[in-house]
Image (cartoon, rainbow, N blue to C red; front, side, top):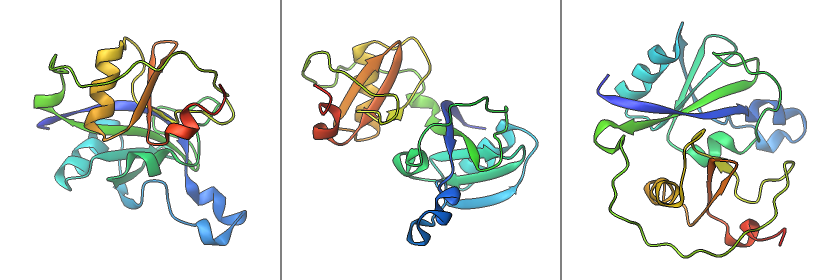
Amino acid sequence: MSNDYRYVGCYWDNFVLRNQDPNVYTRSIPNQMKDVSSVNECAQIAEDNNATVFGVQNGKACFIGDDLEHALNAGPYAGQCAPLGNAYINQVYTIVPRDEASISLNSPTYNFRGCYNDSPQDLAVPIKTRSTGNDSLRCATIAQRYNATVFGIQNGYCYIGSDENQAFKYG
């Protein structure tokens, strides 16, 4: 594999929403590929198909796509997530080109807007990008890479999004 990948988190698949609204039926990560036995195997399939996002679901099902925000839009799964996902629950990853794997110190432009409240049921900045070790420069660089317009750090986790009104809605 010529690229790296980063774990994003454990998220519901939109498939479960079809019972709530039949018009919403699109998978969170749209392209189901062959079954796999490891995250590395699914990562390789994603890379071979030039996908930027992939997930493993139900212990073996590999899904690939190109829209991280869509991959996460059904919301995070709060329970225990198996290493290869659960039924209708994706372990979500992003492909990171090796030359971008270590964040550059060329500082992106950003403005500190202050500290704001959040809600665990409806995150103000919805996309969790990395697990730990984030500072504002690192998180700003990640946001810039994914064309996100807002970012925040909470408990060491970097979150990104594209809706400024949503980011500040809890004051």
